[in-house]
Image (tube, rainbow, N blue to C red; front, top):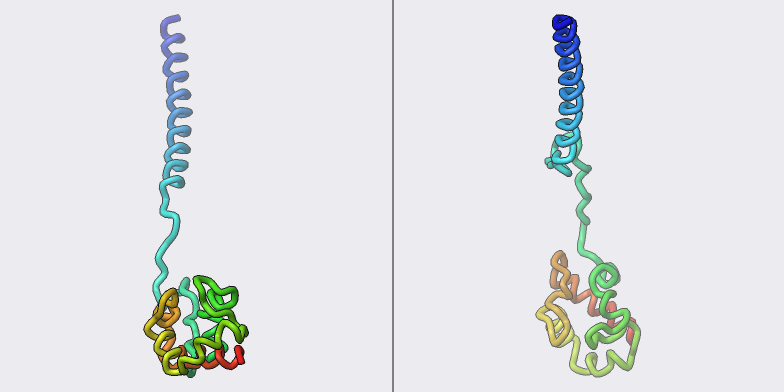
Length: 138
C-alpha cells in the first residue's frame, strides 16, 4: 500500500509540476511580449525604409509659401496679422513701402515671427509670399 501511495504521489507531483512548468512558460512568453520594444529603427538603404522624398527643383512661388506657412495666421488675423485679401488691413502696411514689408517678414515684427516660422524658406521665397499677399489686398 505504501508503495502504491508513493507511486501515485510521485506521478501526481510530476503532473502538477509539469502543469506548473507549462503555465510558467506561458507566463514568461506573455511577459516577454509585454516588455518587447514598441518600435524599431529603420535606416536609409534598408528594405524597411521609405522611399526618399523628392526635393523641389526650384524656389516655391509666393502662393505656395503662403499656403504652407502664412495662411495659419493671415487667413483669420491671428495676433493682429493683416487678413488675406483685406485692403483695410493691408493699406497702412503697404503705405510704409514694400522694403519695410520684406524686412518685417524676414526679421519678424510685433507678432510676426521671423521668416513666418518657415524654416525651409529662403528670403526670396518669403518676399514672394509678401508680394502674393500685397497683390491680393489691392
